[in-house]
Image (cartoon, rainbow, N blue to C red; front, side):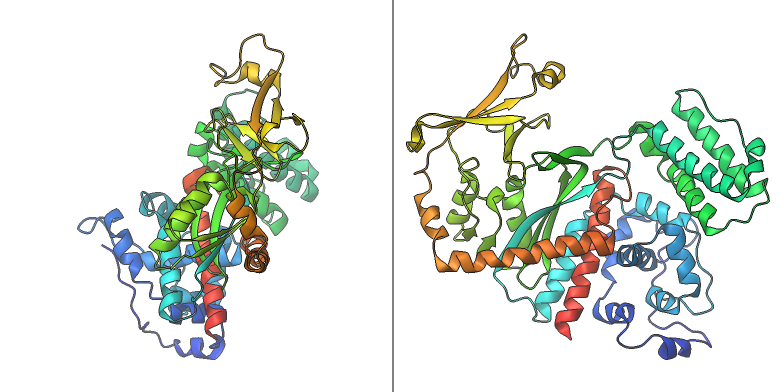
Length: 483
C-alpha cells in the first residue's frame, strides 16, 4: 500500500525546522512551490495496493532522486546526509528523529517503480505549467540546442571496468598497509565476466570483514564505487559496457562516446522540451519534436532560435507551414534538396562533415565544379574504406573491392532566397543573440548537476537522469524569477 505523505509531521522536535531551515532555503522554497501529489497518481500503476507490506512513501523516494540531481551525490551519500542534515529531513517530510532508509531502496525504486514511465516529458511539463500559472513564462520563442553526455562506462569492456574499480581499491589498501597483499584473494586471470564479478565480491568481503582496517574515505569511496558497479549495474555489465551509447562528434577531430540531450528553452531560461538520443544523432532532425513537445506543455511557440544545424529544408517548410519564424542561419551543406540516400547520411554541423548511418564520419571533403556557378558545384565527402569493408551496413552502400567510398551533395545557392533575405533583417540578428542563453543552461546542467557523465547505463537511465536534472534547474529558475 502506498503511504500518503502527511502534511504535518508529529514530533516533539518539529520546531527545530523553523529554527535551522530558514525561509530562503532552497529546499524549503521548493516544498512550498511544488505540489508533489502528482507522484502518487503517476506511480500508482507500479505499486501493488492490496498485498505486501507498506512501501516507503513514493514522494519521499522521488525527493531523494531530486536531491541527488541538485547536490550531485551518490545513493549512499545522499542517504547518509539525510541522517544529519535537517534541511534534507524537512524536505523529505521526516521528523528530526526519524531513522533513514537503506540506500539500496533507491535502486529498487528506480528499477521497479519508475519503469515504463516517461518521466522526462512529465517533469518538464509540470514545471512549464507551473511557470505559466504563476505568470513568469511569457515568451513565445524557444531556443534549441543539444548537449553531450559521456557514457559512464566509455568504450571499455565490462571486465576492464571491474578490473579498474578493483585496482583502485587495492591501491588504497596498499597506501594504508602494504602487508595486506598476502591477505587478499587471488586476482582473476580468466576472460569470463562471471569470474571477474566473483573476484570483486571476494575482494569486497575481505576488505569489509577480514582485514581490520578502518574504512577511511580514501578507501571507502573506491570500495563503494566497486560495490555499486557489481551490485547495481551487474545486469548492464552482463549485456554490454553500455549497449545504447554511441560515438558522437563535437568537431572534425573531436569525438565523445555517449548521449545527446536535445533541448528547447524559453527566453526566460525555462526548459520546455528535451529528447535524449544516442551520441551520433543529428541535431536538426529533433527540431519538429522539440516544438511539438513544447506546445504540448501549453506554450505558444511562434519563433524558434537555433544554429545552422536546424536550418534543414524540412524544418524551413515545417516552421513556415505552422506560422513560425526559424531564426537559424542557412548552411549550404545542410539545406539541400535533391541529394541521394538522404536518410542514410546526416550532416554534423560541429565537424562540418557528413556521417553515415553506421556513425562513421567522413575523413575529408572536396568541392568540384566551376566557382561562382553554385548550381553546378558539388561537394564530395570521402569515407574511410577500411571501416566500410567491415561495416554491417555495407551491402548496397560500399562496393566490394572499391578503393574509395564517397557521398556527394550538390549546392544550389538560390534554393532558399526567402530565408536568406530573413537572415539579413534586424529582427533575425537581434533574436540570434539569444542563443547564448541555452549554452549557459547546458553548462549549468553539466557543471552543477553532473550532466557531463551518465550515472547509469542505457537510454532509459539517461532519460531519468535528464528528467531529474532538468526538473531541478527549472525549479531553481522558477524560484529566482518568482522572487
